[in-house]
Length: 294
Image (cartoon, rainbow, N blue to C red; front, side):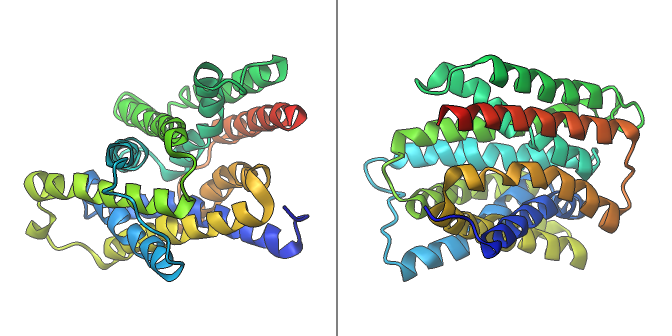
């Protein structure tokens, strides 16, 4: 790995902006599409740039190999469930809250890693970071202006969606020796296959005419926030490694709040800012504990 240059930091900021922009685009998409359709279109359009890259680099896609069941399970847990839950939740929760709730993924990953991996055990610094981070989320749930009886369950579902990302990441360790592009392409294929019949038999999106804004948003979610973002992530990982790439976690909720205010004029309360600060501090201590160990 080489020392990060200005271009590397620029790419990291671009990746954070792309992932952060997903939240307000999901909000716009929910105006015309159901959560299953949003999840399906996201993985369908997202698979196009990833599979094109695999074709260009002559990387074999093993979606239907002897390990097909792992790709299917990971596709369901790491893509289908979180994409559906987030889209369902964002319909009645501000997108900036979704950005903060989803930023807890590294904290959940640390908790799960303690129980399911040998090298990611708790220490005092990690424990402190986790407690600070999740205390910020608990504080966020006390904001009655933004989270109330009408959308409390939706907020919990978004938080659950972030947890499934983590579970999917743990399951991916089962096929960790395979190329990133192959794994991503294969789980996207299985996510498409799982969601297609659900879209056809449950939501039937062809029965209504979507708005232009919602249509643009779902295409953007797939092609850019899913497909292109994964390709950019691959490049950053290859050039600078996982520790550098993981710094994107600090930027996503900040950009998410800013973008949702600019494009959707969403309310930013004092509790939103305090909870954001607590989550970022928690992330800092968790990552600091990990970097000390390495």
